Image 1 (cartoon, one colour):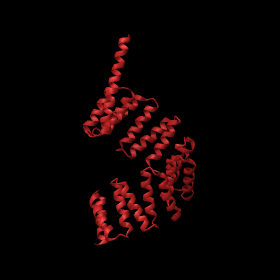
Image 2: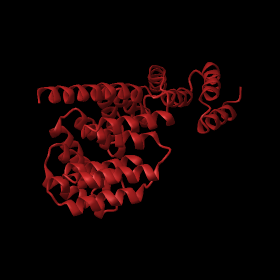
Image 3: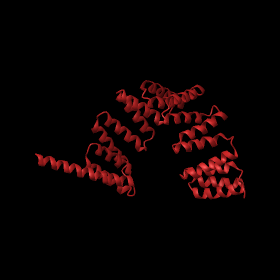
Image 4: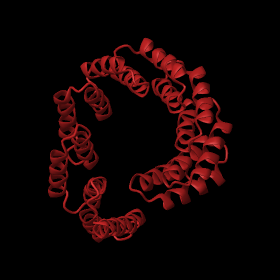
Length: 302
């Protein structure tokens, strides 16, 4: 069985989403070449993307057992541990990697984010500082600092680091959204809106960003503009069930249950098998029923 040719075929199947075919080839290769770490590593990647996480972990671990000196194996297994909400194990892998390569940018970044996820802010800052010292001109170094300070509710340092990241050319929407949230809390609404607008201009087909801008208007008390944003969203994405879901959430907050139900029903017409939407419909029907009962009781008391 030709190793190179079959690895190439497996990769071709993987790239176009034919995961089962890729797995079949890699499994045969693993039987013929049980000492080739690449085979197990590549199969782990496919299993991960198939969401067969237990098998992915087994193959990552097999690749590491065969070749414990490859940093990428620890990077990827650590990432999977994070996906599985096992930050302690992720940290173990990234710390091993950093002993091999102290300047591994992604490992330094990931370790800091891991500490942030665990709410260990001092360790997160220490890791982020280490990244910043080694890569002072990297926008991500400052964006990482901004993320940590934002979680710590330190608006001044969040803003300082967000601005520096953007000054250095950061185009990650998350950095602008972080800064927008700080501007909102500082009541610098024009600046916040400018950041939301810019993020939408960067990714005009990302419906979540439109919802964030609508929520911004709602949070600052401009409910009319928030609703107008949802109307515009549906005009832009008329066949997207999420657009109707977002507007339904707005109506639910305002206790306008008839309109919320109408939007959920439209969303279900587009995506009839969505269990969350089905449950939301039942909940809204109950809320509307309770609302009607309360109105009836009030009339009787009068």
